[in-house]
Amino acid sequence: MPGNFKGALLALLSMGIYSTHDVIIKLLGESYPALQILFFSALFSFPPIAILLLRDPTHGTLLPRSPFWVTLRAICVVNSGICGFYAFSVLPLAQVYSILFASPLLITLLSVPILGERVGLARGLAVAVGLAGVLVVLRPGYLALELGHFAALLAAFSSAMAAVSVRRLGRTERTVILILWPIIGNFILTGLSLGFAYRPMEGLDLALTGLIAVLGLTAGFLLIQAYQAGEAANVAPMQYSQMLWAVAYGWLVFDENPDAATLAGAGLIIGSGLFILMRERRGGSRLRPVTEARLRSETVTAPRALLLRRLLRRE
Image 1: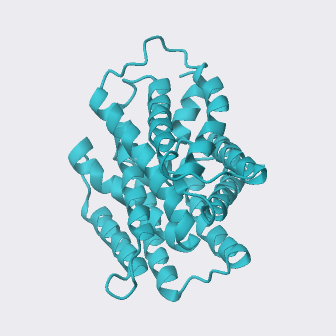
Image 2 (image 1 turned 135 degrees about the vertical axis):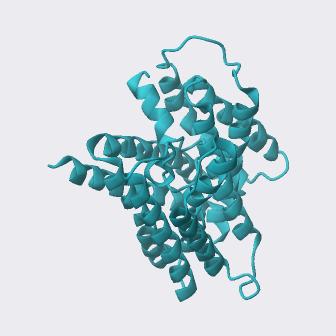
C-alpha cells in the first residue's frame, strides 16, 4: 500500500475515533458537569501517559527552564480541555467543530507577534476569510449566543496559544515537562471543582470516562503512524473529515441537523485552512499550523501528537 494512501486512511480512522471520543463527552455532559467528566477522563489517561513519560531519555528535574512559557502553555492546555468539554456538552457537534477548525488560523495570527513570523497577503486574506466563516457560524445578532459558543472560541484560542508556545520553546524543555505540567494543573483545578459540583456516577458512566481516555490516546497514536507513513501535506487534509463525523453522529445520536449557515461557515473555514496548507507545501515558513495541527483542542486526555512522537522516538 502506498505510503500516502496508508497515511490518509490512518488519519481518517484517527479522526473517526476522536469524533467518537467527543460524542461520549456530549452524552455524559447531559448528566454530569464537564469538569467532572474531564477529571475522571484525565485520571484514567494518566497511567499509560506515565509509562510513556518514563521513556524520556533526557536528564533533569521537573522545573522548567522557561517558567513563563511552560506555565502559559499548561494553562492553555487545561483551559482548552475545560472549554472544549463544556462546548461539546451543550452545543451541536457541527457547530463546535466549525469553531475549533479556526485554531490553525489563530496559530497563523499569533505566530506574528510571538514567533516573529511574516504572514503574506495571500495567507492574511485566507485567515480573514476563515475568521469570517466563524462569524457566519455564530451569526451574532441573529443567533442567540450561548456560553457554549464562547467556550468553543476560547478552546480554539487556547489550543492555538498552546501550539505556538510549544514552537516558542522548541527543544529547550524536556518533553516530560511539557506533558506533565498540564496534567498536574488539570488535576488540581478539576479536582477542586468536584467539591462544588459533583454528581455520583453510575458504573457504566464511569467506565465511559475511561473509554474517553482510551479513545483519545488511541487516536493520537494512529495519527502519529499516519504522519510516519505518508507526507504531512497529504495526511493533514484528512483531519477535516471530523465535520462529516459530526454531521453523521449528530443526526444518528442527537437528532441534530446543521443549518445552511453552519455548513457555509464551516466551508469558508475549511477552505481557508486548505489554502494555507497549499502555501505550507511551498515551504518558506518554520510554522506549519495546518500541517502539524490536529484541528481540535489539545487536552490532557489527548496530548499533542508531536510530543508523544518525541517520547516514542526517544528524541
